[in-house]
Image 1 (cartoon, rainbow, N blue to C red):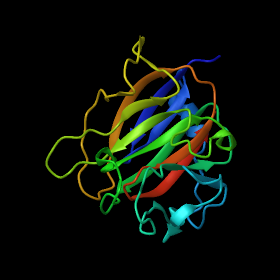
Image 2 (cartoon, helix red, strand yellow):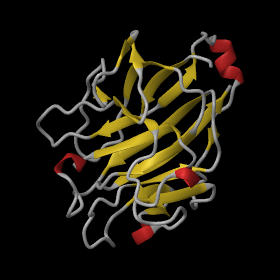
Image 3 (cartoon, helix red, strand yellow):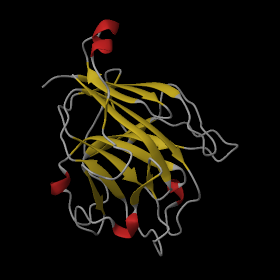
Image 4 (tube, rainbow, N blue to C red):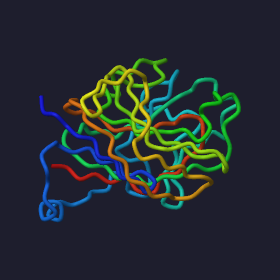
Length: 227
């Protein structure tokens, strides 16, 4: 099984997952970024929300308008642990992923307090068809996205595990989430920029998904470069 390195570059998240061998600038230039989001609809994406079947987009949680893919909860009476994710319908092995996002609006009524400006990109996920009906989160690794409250520090870029483990600088994780080495907080509804180097993992492949974690979010770029 190949060892992978996880390199995360954010606008506010440019998440890059690549094989451990070095790739020269010339090799990078020869590769092309391919958009996974067509800017028009959810073609090639499948929602899975806890309590609902794969493909059922409860409450129109995932929607596209004006070239932006959004998670919204305005049709929910209460969030009530309806955690979900939007899965791309292809398995990826060696790749870099760029995602541009922002948090908007307010936390959904009935959401846990930690859901405030909390989202994530889940990668190397289990196949979406195998996610249980009431399963809140897939087996996966996650690049955790955080937003600030306007005054306190709340760095984005934790690496979190769900049913997996991860080694960072040769040390296995001892908690579900590990704080980033480079700590930056992004307040408000800005499209931010950051660079984070998040360590190593040995997972071979899996699916990519965008969390619906109770706070409204926008995504306007989702691009992949495969090796």
